[in-house]
Image (cartoon, rainbow, N blue to C red):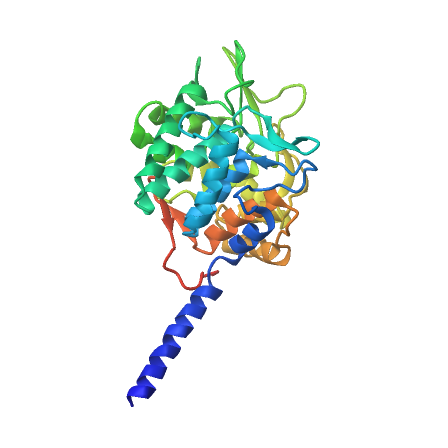
Length: 368
C-alpha cells in the first residue's frame, strides 16, 4: 500500500512538473532564442547593421519580469548598462541605438535618448525591486527616474510639464514634438508616487492623448506650437501607424478602475469600430480625416486584444494572431504580440496604481 501511495504521489509531482514545463511562456522562450544574444542584447534583424535599441532592451526587461525570469533580466540589464549607459543607468540615460557602425566596429550609433525606453526601464527596475525584494534594482530605478525628470521633461507654455521623446532635437523656441505612445498611462499613474514632476505629467499626458485624436485615432508624432496649440492639420498629414498602435495597447491594458481608462476608451472607439468592421486593424490612418489605408501586421492585431471591448471582435484578432504568429524576423510585431497576447492569456495585469500583477503561480495560461 505504501509503495502504491508513493508511486501515486511521485506521478502527481511529475505531472505537476511537466505541466509547469509545458505551460511556461512558450512565446517568450521563443523570443529569447530568436532575438536575444548570449550576453543579453536584443537584436533587430530587420536592419542590416543588426541593431539593438534601448526600446528593445526595455521591452525585454518587462517580459523577463512578467515571466519571473531573473537570470535573463540581469543579462539584459547588464548589457544595457554597460553598452548604452557607460556602465551606470543612474548616471546616464541610455543611448537609443547600438550596432555595427562601420566594418566590424560595434558601438553606439546614435547617443540620443528615447524617453519611452527610459520610462520602461525605470519602471521595470522599480517593480523588479518590489517583486524580487532587491533594493539595488530600486535604487537604480529611482536614480534613472530622476535623470529622466531632469533631462527629458520640459515646461511647455499652455500645456505645462511634458515628457519629450528624447533629450535632444524635440524642443524649439516656440514648437515641441511629441509621441503619444511614449508614456503609457498606467506607468504615468505609477510614477505619481514620486511626486513632481510625475503628478503633473500624468494629467498633461492625458491631454496629449485626448486632444491629438480628433477623429478617434492617435498620431505617431504631433507638434505643439506656442500660442497656437496642437498642429493637427499641417501641410503633410499626421499619420497614426506603427508608433500609435501602442497607444491602444497601453489603454487596453489599463486597470478598469483607473479613472482615465473610460475616457480614453471612449475617445479611441473609432479605432475599435473600424477594426471590428474590417476584421483587421488599419496600417495607417490620417488623423485629421480618419481615413485609413492598408492592413496592419499581426502585431497590430495582438495590440488590440486588450483594447477591443467586443468579445467577437477580440476573437477575430485572437485567431489572426494564432494563425500568423510572428517569426524570428519580425522584432516589432513580436514584441507587440508578447504584450497583447501575454495580457490576453492572463500572464500579467496592471493594478489601478500601475503596478505589475504577474501570474507567476499559474500552471497553464487561460486563453479564454
